[in-house]
Length: 256
Picture 1 (cartoon, rainbow, N blue to C red):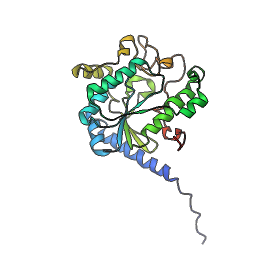
Picture 2 (cartoon, rainbow, N blue to C red):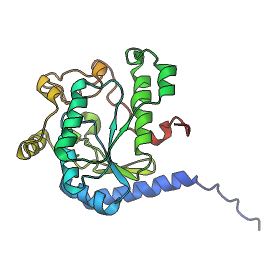
Picture 3 (cartoon, helix red, strand yellow):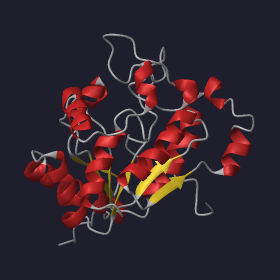
C-alpha cells in the first residue's frame, strides 16, 4: 500500500502566530474584565514581565494609562513615535508629563532618513498620499520600536470610533500581543480619573482636539462627532496603520 503523501508543514512563523493568538484569546477571556490598572499589573509583572513596553502618543488622554504604568513600574519602557510632524504643544506636553510621572525609560523612534529622503524629501507627502506618508513616518518606525518586545500597551478605547467598537483587552499583531487596558472605559471614566489624580492634560484638548496626531492631518472635532473624526477629516482613512495587522511586516529591512 502506497504511503499517503505528506502535507506541507505550516511555516514556523504561522505556527507561532497561531499560538500567540490562542494565548491572547485565553488571557482576554480570563482577565479582560479586570480594571485597567489590574490589567497593567498582571501583564507587566507576570505574563510579560521583562518583555513589555507601552506605546504612547502623549495625546488627549494619554496621561491616564501612563499614570497607571508609573504606579506599577516607572521604569517600564515607553515608546514615543516622533513623526517629525507633531504639534509643538504635544512635544512640550510629552516632556512635562514624563517629569510629572517620573517615567525613566522613554524610547523615541523616528522615521528612517533614507526613506524620507527618497519618498518625502520636501515634507509634503501628506498632501499627496496620506497612506504613503503614514507608512514612512508612523508604521515602519513603530514596527522597529516594538520589535524587541513580546507585548505592548496602548491607550485605545472602544468609544473612540466605530472601527474600535469591539476592541478586546488582549489581542495579537503577528507574533506579539497588544494590550488595551482602557478598552472598556468611557469618556466619563477617563475624565474622572484625570480629575482624581490631578493629571496634566494636553493643551490642545481645550481647543477641541480630542484625538491628536500629526498637525497637517488633525483638526478639532465638531460637536456630536466621534473622538477620531478630526483625523484625516474628509477622507475614508480612519487609522494610520500602526494599530492594524501586519505591523511587523512593514520593517524596511535589517539595515535600519
